[in-house]
Length: 476
Image 1 (cartoon, rainbow, N blue to C red):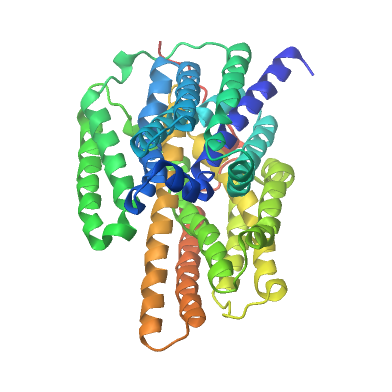
Image 2: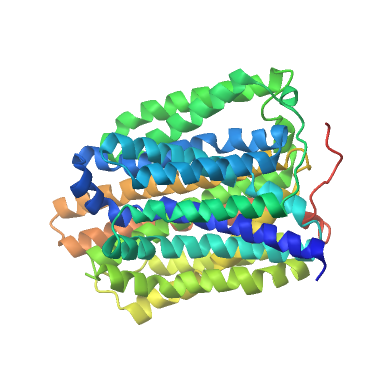
Protein backbone atom coordinates (compact mmCIF):
# COMPACT_ATOMS: atom_id res chain seq x y z
CA UNK A 1 0.00 0.00 0.00
CA UNK A 2 1.47 3.38 -1.03
CA UNK A 3 2.14 6.19 1.42
CA UNK A 4 -0.69 8.24 -0.14
CA UNK A 5 -3.10 5.33 0.18
CA UNK A 6 -2.10 4.76 3.82
CA UNK A 7 -2.67 8.45 4.51
CA UNK A 8 -6.19 8.27 3.07
CA UNK A 9 -7.14 5.34 5.27
CA UNK A 10 -5.66 7.12 8.29
CA UNK A 11 -7.95 10.04 7.45
CA UNK A 12 -10.87 7.60 7.36
CA UNK A 13 -9.88 6.30 10.81
CA UNK A 14 -9.87 9.82 12.20
CA UNK A 15 -13.20 10.71 10.60
CA UNK A 16 -14.77 7.49 11.87
CA UNK A 17 -13.45 8.09 15.39
CA UNK A 18 -15.02 11.55 15.37
CA UNK A 19 -18.31 10.09 14.14
CA UNK A 20 -18.18 7.46 16.87
CA UNK A 21 -17.52 10.08 19.53
CA UNK A 22 -20.38 12.27 18.28
CA UNK A 23 -22.90 9.42 18.18
CA UNK A 24 -21.78 8.16 21.58
CA UNK A 25 -22.17 11.58 23.12
CA UNK A 26 -25.74 11.83 21.91
CA UNK A 27 -26.79 8.77 23.94
CA UNK A 28 -24.16 8.06 26.59
CA UNK A 29 -25.43 10.75 28.94
CA UNK A 30 -28.94 9.30 29.19
CA UNK A 31 -28.02 6.44 31.55
CA UNK A 32 -26.00 8.78 33.77
CA UNK A 33 -28.82 11.27 34.30
CA UNK A 34 -29.99 9.91 37.70
CA UNK A 35 -26.43 10.15 39.07
CA UNK A 36 -26.01 13.65 37.59
CA UNK A 37 -29.29 14.78 39.14
CA UNK A 38 -28.28 13.44 42.54
CA UNK A 39 -24.76 14.92 42.57
CA UNK A 40 -25.46 18.33 41.03
CA UNK A 41 -28.91 18.98 42.44
CA UNK A 42 -30.83 19.24 39.18
CA UNK A 43 -34.55 19.97 39.46
CA UNK A 44 -36.58 17.34 37.54
CA UNK A 45 -37.67 19.91 34.93
CA UNK A 46 -34.03 20.96 34.35
CA UNK A 47 -32.53 17.51 33.92
CA UNK A 48 -33.63 17.00 30.31
CA UNK A 49 -31.51 20.02 29.34
CA UNK A 50 -28.38 17.91 29.75
CA UNK A 51 -29.57 16.32 26.49
CA UNK A 52 -31.55 19.19 24.95
CA UNK A 53 -28.75 21.75 25.17
CA UNK A 54 -26.50 19.46 23.15
CA UNK A 55 -29.17 18.66 20.55
CA UNK A 56 -30.16 22.28 19.99
CA UNK A 57 -26.59 23.45 19.39
CA UNK A 58 -25.70 20.42 17.31
CA UNK A 59 -28.74 20.41 15.07
CA UNK A 60 -28.88 24.18 14.76
CA UNK A 61 -25.29 24.73 13.63
CA UNK A 62 -24.69 21.84 11.23
CA UNK A 63 -25.65 23.70 8.06
CA UNK A 64 -23.68 26.83 8.97
CA UNK A 65 -20.64 24.80 10.00
CA UNK A 66 -20.73 22.82 6.76
CA UNK A 67 -20.70 25.98 4.66
CA UNK A 68 -17.92 27.49 6.75
CA UNK A 69 -15.88 24.41 5.88
CA UNK A 70 -16.19 25.27 2.20
CA UNK A 71 -15.36 28.93 2.81
CA UNK A 72 -12.39 28.73 5.20
CA UNK A 73 -11.33 25.11 4.68
CA UNK A 74 -12.85 21.86 5.91
CA UNK A 75 -9.66 20.85 7.73
CA UNK A 76 -9.66 24.07 9.75
CA UNK A 77 -13.31 23.69 10.78
CA UNK A 78 -12.79 20.02 11.62
CA UNK A 79 -9.79 20.81 13.84
CA UNK A 80 -11.57 23.69 15.55
CA UNK A 81 -14.64 21.52 16.18
CA UNK A 82 -12.58 18.78 17.81
CA UNK A 83 -10.77 21.35 19.97
CA UNK A 84 -14.05 22.94 21.13
CA UNK A 85 -15.56 19.52 21.82
CA UNK A 86 -12.56 18.35 23.87
CA UNK A 87 -12.46 21.58 25.89
CA UNK A 88 -16.22 21.46 26.50
CA UNK A 89 -15.95 17.81 27.59
CA UNK A 90 -13.33 18.78 30.16
CA UNK A 91 -15.64 21.55 31.39
CA UNK A 92 -18.59 19.13 31.59
CA UNK A 93 -16.56 16.59 33.54
CA UNK A 94 -15.56 19.27 36.04
CA UNK A 95 -19.09 20.71 36.36
CA UNK A 96 -20.11 21.67 39.90
CA UNK A 97 -23.68 22.77 39.20
CA UNK A 98 -26.55 22.50 36.70
CA UNK A 99 -25.79 25.77 34.89
CA UNK A 100 -22.15 24.84 34.32
CA UNK A 101 -23.04 21.40 32.93
CA UNK A 102 -25.80 22.71 30.65
CA UNK A 103 -23.46 25.38 29.28
CA UNK A 104 -20.75 22.77 28.70
CA UNK A 105 -23.22 20.51 26.93
CA UNK A 106 -24.22 23.38 24.63
CA UNK A 107 -20.54 23.93 23.78
CA UNK A 108 -20.14 20.20 23.16
CA UNK A 109 -22.97 20.50 20.63
CA UNK A 110 -21.17 23.42 18.96
CA UNK A 111 -17.95 21.40 18.68
CA UNK A 112 -19.76 18.31 17.41
CA UNK A 113 -21.58 20.34 14.78
CA UNK A 114 -18.34 21.89 13.52
CA UNK A 115 -16.53 18.55 13.31
CA UNK A 116 -19.29 16.31 11.99
CA UNK A 117 -20.70 18.84 9.48
CA UNK A 118 -17.59 18.57 7.29
CA UNK A 119 -16.84 14.87 7.82
CA UNK A 120 -18.62 13.59 4.72
CA UNK A 121 -17.22 16.43 2.63
CA UNK A 122 -13.69 15.40 3.63
CA UNK A 123 -14.48 11.73 3.02
CA UNK A 124 -15.84 12.04 -0.51
CA UNK A 125 -13.08 14.41 -1.63
CA UNK A 126 -10.41 12.11 -0.13
CA UNK A 127 -11.74 8.88 -1.66
CA UNK A 128 -12.37 9.65 -5.31
CA UNK A 129 -12.19 6.05 -6.57
CA UNK A 130 -15.68 4.49 -6.64
CA UNK A 131 -14.63 1.18 -5.09
CA UNK A 132 -12.57 2.76 -2.34
CA UNK A 133 -15.32 5.25 -1.58
CA UNK A 134 -17.87 2.45 -1.18
CA UNK A 135 -15.57 0.72 1.32
CA UNK A 136 -14.88 3.98 3.15
CA UNK A 137 -18.59 4.82 3.45
CA UNK A 138 -19.25 1.28 4.70
CA UNK A 139 -16.64 1.68 7.45
CA UNK A 140 -17.97 5.13 8.31
CA UNK A 141 -21.55 3.85 8.55
CA UNK A 142 -20.35 0.93 10.68
CA UNK A 143 -18.89 3.29 13.28
CA UNK A 144 -22.18 5.18 13.41
CA UNK A 145 -24.12 1.97 14.01
CA UNK A 146 -21.57 0.83 16.59
CA UNK A 147 -21.77 4.15 18.42
CA UNK A 148 -25.55 3.99 18.62
CA UNK A 149 -25.29 0.50 20.09
CA UNK A 150 -22.45 1.18 22.52
CA UNK A 151 -23.64 4.50 23.93
CA UNK A 152 -25.94 3.36 26.68
CA UNK A 153 -23.81 0.32 27.59
CA UNK A 154 -20.60 2.34 27.85
CA UNK A 155 -22.39 5.09 29.76
CA UNK A 156 -23.60 2.59 32.34
CA UNK A 157 -20.17 1.00 32.75
CA UNK A 158 -18.34 4.32 33.18
CA UNK A 159 -20.96 5.73 35.53
CA UNK A 160 -20.98 2.63 37.75
CA UNK A 161 -17.20 2.13 37.87
CA UNK A 162 -15.67 5.61 37.70
CA UNK A 163 -18.50 8.13 38.09
CA UNK A 164 -20.63 10.16 35.71
CA UNK A 165 -17.85 12.71 35.18
CA UNK A 166 -15.90 10.19 33.11
CA UNK A 167 -18.53 9.89 30.40
CA UNK A 168 -17.32 13.39 29.47
CA UNK A 169 -13.66 13.23 30.50
CA UNK A 170 -13.02 10.20 28.29
CA UNK A 171 -13.53 12.49 25.27
CA UNK A 172 -10.55 14.67 26.15
CA UNK A 173 -7.69 12.26 25.27
CA UNK A 174 -9.63 11.03 22.22
CA UNK A 175 -9.98 14.62 21.03
CA UNK A 176 -6.29 15.38 21.54
CA UNK A 177 -5.20 12.27 19.61
CA UNK A 178 -7.68 13.06 16.84
CA UNK A 179 -6.31 16.59 16.44
CA UNK A 180 -2.73 15.28 16.29
CA UNK A 181 -3.62 12.70 13.62
CA UNK A 182 -5.56 15.21 11.52
CA UNK A 183 -2.61 17.62 11.49
CA UNK A 184 -0.41 14.76 10.28
CA UNK A 185 -2.69 13.04 7.79
CA UNK A 186 -5.01 15.67 6.33
CA UNK A 187 -3.41 18.25 4.04
CA UNK A 188 -4.25 21.90 4.51
CA UNK A 189 -6.61 23.38 1.94
CA UNK A 190 -7.66 26.79 0.77
CA UNK A 191 -11.34 27.51 1.05
CA UNK A 192 -13.34 29.74 -1.24
CA UNK A 193 -12.93 32.67 1.13
CA UNK A 194 -15.61 34.31 3.26
CA UNK A 195 -16.39 36.72 0.43
CA UNK A 196 -17.87 33.78 -1.51
CA UNK A 197 -20.64 33.28 1.04
CA UNK A 198 -20.40 35.79 3.87
CA UNK A 199 -24.15 36.18 4.29
CA UNK A 200 -24.51 37.24 7.93
CA UNK A 201 -28.28 37.70 7.68
CA UNK A 202 -28.71 34.26 6.13
CA UNK A 203 -26.50 32.70 8.81
CA UNK A 204 -28.60 34.31 11.56
CA UNK A 205 -31.89 33.19 9.97
CA UNK A 206 -30.92 29.56 9.41
CA UNK A 207 -29.22 29.13 12.78
CA UNK A 208 -32.11 30.68 14.70
CA UNK A 209 -34.67 28.76 12.64
CA UNK A 210 -33.00 25.38 13.12
CA UNK A 211 -32.33 25.91 16.83
CA UNK A 212 -35.91 27.02 17.45
CA UNK A 213 -37.21 24.08 15.43
CA UNK A 214 -35.12 21.58 17.41
CA UNK A 215 -36.27 23.28 20.63
CA UNK A 216 -39.91 22.87 19.59
CA UNK A 217 -39.37 19.17 18.92
CA UNK A 218 -37.52 18.32 22.15
CA UNK A 219 -40.07 20.23 24.24
CA UNK A 220 -43.20 18.74 22.66
CA UNK A 221 -43.66 16.16 25.42
CA UNK A 222 -43.51 18.89 28.08
CA UNK A 223 -45.55 21.63 26.42
CA UNK A 224 -47.69 19.64 23.99
CA UNK A 225 -49.45 21.70 21.33
CA UNK A 226 -48.00 24.93 22.72
CA UNK A 227 -44.63 23.92 21.30
CA UNK A 228 -46.19 24.19 17.82
CA UNK A 229 -45.91 27.98 18.14
CA UNK A 230 -42.14 27.63 18.32
CA UNK A 231 -42.30 25.29 15.34
CA UNK A 232 -44.34 27.84 13.37
CA UNK A 233 -41.83 30.62 14.07
CA UNK A 234 -39.05 28.23 13.05
CA UNK A 235 -40.73 27.57 9.70
CA UNK A 236 -41.13 31.30 9.10
CA UNK A 237 -37.43 31.88 9.80
CA UNK A 238 -36.38 29.02 7.53
CA UNK A 239 -38.67 30.26 4.75
CA UNK A 240 -37.12 33.72 5.11
CA UNK A 241 -33.69 32.06 4.88
CA UNK A 242 -34.59 30.41 1.56
CA UNK A 243 -35.89 33.72 0.17
CA UNK A 244 -32.67 35.37 1.32
CA UNK A 245 -30.55 32.70 -0.39
CA UNK A 246 -32.41 33.20 -3.65
CA UNK A 247 -31.70 36.95 -3.65
CA UNK A 248 -28.36 37.39 -1.81
CA UNK A 249 -25.28 38.27 -3.84
CA UNK A 250 -23.15 35.78 -1.90
CA UNK A 251 -25.59 33.27 -0.41
CA UNK A 252 -24.60 31.11 2.53
CA UNK A 253 -26.35 28.13 0.90
CA UNK A 254 -26.46 28.33 -2.89
CA UNK A 255 -29.82 26.83 -3.80
CA UNK A 256 -28.25 25.02 -6.74
CA UNK A 257 -27.48 22.09 -4.42
CA UNK A 258 -31.23 21.39 -4.19
CA UNK A 259 -31.45 21.08 -7.98
CA UNK A 260 -29.54 17.82 -7.74
CA UNK A 261 -32.06 14.96 -7.68
CA UNK A 262 -29.54 12.84 -5.77
CA UNK A 263 -29.05 15.42 -3.02
CA UNK A 264 -32.72 16.38 -2.71
CA UNK A 265 -33.99 12.81 -3.01
CA UNK A 266 -31.50 11.27 -0.58
CA UNK A 267 -32.25 13.88 2.06
CA UNK A 268 -36.01 13.40 1.67
CA UNK A 269 -35.61 9.63 1.99
CA UNK A 270 -33.33 10.11 4.97
CA UNK A 271 -35.85 12.22 6.90
CA UNK A 272 -38.57 9.59 6.41
CA UNK A 273 -36.31 6.60 7.09
CA UNK A 274 -34.53 7.89 10.17
CA UNK A 275 -37.78 9.29 11.55
CA UNK A 276 -39.06 5.71 11.52
CA UNK A 277 -35.88 3.88 12.52
CA UNK A 278 -34.70 6.05 15.42
CA UNK A 279 -38.21 5.92 16.85
CA UNK A 280 -38.09 2.12 16.40
CA UNK A 281 -34.93 1.96 18.49
CA UNK A 282 -36.57 3.91 21.30
CA UNK A 283 -40.02 2.25 21.11
CA UNK A 284 -38.80 -1.33 20.99
CA UNK A 285 -36.59 -0.77 24.04
CA UNK A 286 -39.52 0.75 25.93
CA UNK A 287 -41.85 -2.07 24.86
CA UNK A 288 -39.46 -4.70 26.17
CA UNK A 289 -38.99 -2.90 29.49
CA UNK A 290 -42.51 -1.61 30.16
CA UNK A 291 -44.59 -4.45 28.71
CA UNK A 292 -42.36 -7.54 28.75
CA UNK A 293 -40.61 -6.40 31.95
CA UNK A 294 -37.08 -6.89 30.65
CA UNK A 295 -34.31 -5.30 32.68
CA UNK A 296 -31.87 -2.80 31.15
CA UNK A 297 -29.22 -5.48 30.57
CA UNK A 298 -31.72 -7.93 29.08
CA UNK A 299 -33.04 -5.22 26.75
CA UNK A 300 -29.55 -4.42 25.53
CA UNK A 301 -28.85 -8.12 24.98
CA UNK A 302 -32.15 -8.58 23.13
CA UNK A 303 -31.30 -5.73 20.75
CA UNK A 304 -27.73 -6.91 20.18
CA UNK A 305 -28.61 -8.98 17.07
CA UNK A 306 -30.00 -5.83 15.43
CA UNK A 307 -26.86 -3.84 16.20
CA UNK A 308 -24.56 -6.63 15.00
CA UNK A 309 -26.53 -7.24 11.81
CA UNK A 310 -26.60 -3.54 10.88
CA UNK A 311 -22.91 -3.11 11.64
CA UNK A 312 -21.87 -6.28 9.81
CA UNK A 313 -23.91 -5.55 6.69
CA UNK A 314 -22.72 -1.93 6.47
CA UNK A 315 -19.08 -2.99 6.85
CA UNK A 316 -18.87 -6.15 4.72
CA UNK A 317 -21.92 -6.46 2.47
CA UNK A 318 -23.00 -2.96 1.49
CA UNK A 319 -19.72 -1.87 -0.21
CA UNK A 320 -19.70 -4.96 -2.48
CA UNK A 321 -23.36 -4.63 -3.43
CA UNK A 322 -23.04 -0.88 -4.08
CA UNK A 323 -20.04 -1.41 -6.34
CA UNK A 324 -21.86 -4.11 -8.32
CA UNK A 325 -25.46 -2.88 -8.43
CA UNK A 326 -25.28 0.82 -7.53
CA UNK A 327 -26.35 2.71 -4.42
CA UNK A 328 -29.96 3.21 -5.59
CA UNK A 329 -30.64 -0.52 -5.95
CA UNK A 330 -29.01 -1.22 -2.58
CA UNK A 331 -31.10 1.52 -0.96
CA UNK A 332 -34.35 0.08 -2.33
CA UNK A 333 -33.41 -3.44 -1.21
CA UNK A 334 -32.56 -2.21 2.29
CA UNK A 335 -35.86 -0.35 2.56
CA UNK A 336 -37.76 -3.52 1.64
CA UNK A 337 -36.09 -5.32 4.58
CA UNK A 338 -36.92 -2.44 6.95
CA UNK A 339 -40.54 -2.41 5.75
CA UNK A 340 -40.71 -6.13 6.50
CA UNK A 341 -39.32 -5.58 10.01
CA UNK A 342 -41.81 -2.85 10.80
CA UNK A 343 -44.73 -4.78 9.32
CA UNK A 344 -43.84 -7.67 11.63
CA UNK A 345 -43.92 -5.33 14.64
CA UNK A 346 -47.38 -3.97 13.86
CA UNK A 347 -48.83 -7.30 15.05
CA UNK A 348 -46.69 -7.72 18.18
CA UNK A 349 -48.85 -9.01 21.11
CA UNK A 350 -48.70 -7.91 24.74
CA UNK A 351 -47.35 -11.35 25.70
CA UNK A 352 -44.75 -11.38 22.92
CA UNK A 353 -42.16 -14.12 22.80
CA UNK A 354 -38.67 -13.04 21.87
CA UNK A 355 -37.84 -15.85 19.42
CA UNK A 356 -41.04 -15.65 17.38
CA UNK A 357 -42.15 -12.03 17.77
CA UNK A 358 -38.96 -9.98 18.15
CA UNK A 359 -35.96 -11.92 16.85
CA UNK A 360 -37.21 -11.86 13.21
CA UNK A 361 -37.38 -8.07 13.51
CA UNK A 362 -33.81 -7.91 14.82
CA UNK A 363 -32.69 -9.90 11.78
CA UNK A 364 -34.68 -7.94 9.17
CA UNK A 365 -33.40 -4.69 10.62
CA UNK A 366 -30.11 -5.51 8.90
CA UNK A 367 -31.64 -3.49 6.07
CA UNK A 368 -30.38 -0.44 7.92
CA UNK A 369 -26.85 -1.59 7.10
CA UNK A 370 -27.75 -1.28 3.42
CA UNK A 371 -29.79 1.91 3.65
CA UNK A 372 -27.40 4.12 5.62
CA UNK A 373 -24.28 3.74 3.41
CA UNK A 374 -26.39 3.98 0.23
CA UNK A 375 -28.05 7.18 1.45
CA UNK A 376 -24.65 8.65 2.29
CA UNK A 377 -23.28 7.84 -1.16
CA UNK A 378 -26.35 9.24 -2.91
CA UNK A 379 -26.63 12.29 -0.66
CA UNK A 380 -23.05 13.31 -1.41
CA UNK A 381 -22.99 12.28 -5.07
CA UNK A 382 -24.27 15.61 -6.38
CA UNK A 383 -21.76 17.70 -4.44
CA UNK A 384 -19.13 19.78 -6.19
CA UNK A 385 -15.79 19.94 -4.43
CA UNK A 386 -16.45 23.56 -3.41
CA UNK A 387 -19.88 22.63 -2.02
CA UNK A 388 -18.94 19.34 -0.32
CA UNK A 389 -18.91 20.84 3.18
CA UNK A 390 -22.30 22.48 2.68
CA UNK A 391 -23.86 19.29 1.28
CA UNK A 392 -22.33 17.33 4.17
CA UNK A 393 -23.78 19.79 6.70
CA UNK A 394 -27.16 19.69 4.97
CA UNK A 395 -27.16 15.87 5.00
CA UNK A 396 -26.34 15.76 8.71
CA UNK A 397 -28.99 18.40 9.44
CA UNK A 398 -31.78 16.44 7.78
CA UNK A 399 -30.55 13.37 9.66
CA UNK A 400 -30.95 15.10 13.02
CA UNK A 401 -34.29 16.64 12.08
CA UNK A 402 -35.65 13.27 10.94
CA UNK A 403 -34.57 11.54 14.15
CA UNK A 404 -35.88 14.27 16.45
CA UNK A 405 -39.22 14.70 14.70
CA UNK A 406 -39.74 10.95 14.40
CA UNK A 407 -39.25 10.30 18.10
CA UNK A 408 -41.37 13.28 19.15
CA UNK A 409 -44.23 12.45 16.76
CA UNK A 410 -44.38 8.72 17.40
CA UNK A 411 -43.92 9.05 21.17
CA UNK A 412 -46.83 11.48 21.30
CA UNK A 413 -49.05 9.21 19.18
CA UNK A 414 -48.17 6.16 21.28
CA UNK A 415 -48.87 7.99 24.55
CA UNK A 416 -52.22 9.32 23.28
CA UNK A 417 -53.30 5.87 22.09
CA UNK A 418 -52.26 4.31 25.41
CA UNK A 419 -54.25 6.87 27.41
CA UNK A 420 -57.31 6.21 25.28
CA UNK A 421 -57.10 2.44 25.79
CA UNK A 422 -56.57 2.85 29.54
CA UNK A 423 -59.65 5.07 29.71
CA UNK A 424 -61.58 2.34 27.91
CA UNK A 425 -60.69 -0.22 30.58
CA UNK A 426 -57.75 -2.02 28.97
CA UNK A 427 -54.97 -3.40 31.17
CA UNK A 428 -51.70 -1.48 31.33
CA UNK A 429 -49.83 -4.05 29.22
CA UNK A 430 -52.52 -4.13 26.54
CA UNK A 431 -52.82 -0.33 26.49
CA UNK A 432 -49.06 0.17 26.19
CA UNK A 433 -48.88 -2.44 23.45
CA UNK A 434 -51.69 -0.71 21.56
CA UNK A 435 -49.78 2.58 21.74
CA UNK A 436 -46.56 1.04 20.49
CA UNK A 437 -48.34 -0.83 17.71
CA UNK A 438 -49.77 2.48 16.48
CA UNK A 439 -46.25 3.95 16.51
CA UNK A 440 -44.92 0.95 14.56
CA UNK A 441 -47.75 1.32 12.04
CA UNK A 442 -46.90 4.98 11.43
CA UNK A 443 -43.23 3.98 11.12
CA UNK A 444 -44.27 1.45 8.47
CA UNK A 445 -46.09 4.21 6.56
CA UNK A 446 -43.00 6.43 6.74
CA UNK A 447 -40.80 3.63 5.38
CA UNK A 448 -43.20 2.92 2.52
CA UNK A 449 -43.10 6.65 1.75
CA UNK A 450 -39.31 6.51 1.79
CA UNK A 451 -39.34 3.61 -0.69
CA UNK A 452 -41.70 5.46 -3.04
CA UNK A 453 -39.60 8.64 -2.82
CA UNK A 454 -36.40 6.70 -3.51
CA UNK A 455 -37.94 4.92 -6.48
CA UNK A 456 -39.47 8.03 -8.03
CA UNK A 457 -37.05 10.84 -7.20
CA UNK A 458 -33.72 9.04 -7.35
CA UNK A 459 -33.55 8.29 -11.06
CA UNK A 460 -31.44 5.35 -12.11
CA UNK A 461 -27.95 6.79 -12.70
CA UNK A 462 -25.27 5.53 -15.03
CA UNK A 463 -23.13 2.78 -13.56
CA UNK A 464 -20.95 4.27 -10.85
CA UNK A 465 -22.25 7.79 -11.37
CA UNK A 466 -23.84 7.96 -7.95
CA UNK A 467 -20.44 7.27 -6.44
CA UNK A 468 -18.59 10.07 -8.20
CA UNK A 469 -18.43 13.55 -6.78
CA UNK A 470 -18.40 16.25 -9.39
CA UNK A 471 -14.85 17.33 -8.67
CA UNK A 472 -14.78 20.67 -10.41
CA UNK A 473 -12.04 23.25 -9.80
CA UNK A 474 -12.52 25.25 -6.63
CA UNK A 475 -12.89 28.99 -6.96
CA UNK A 476 -10.16 30.50 -4.82
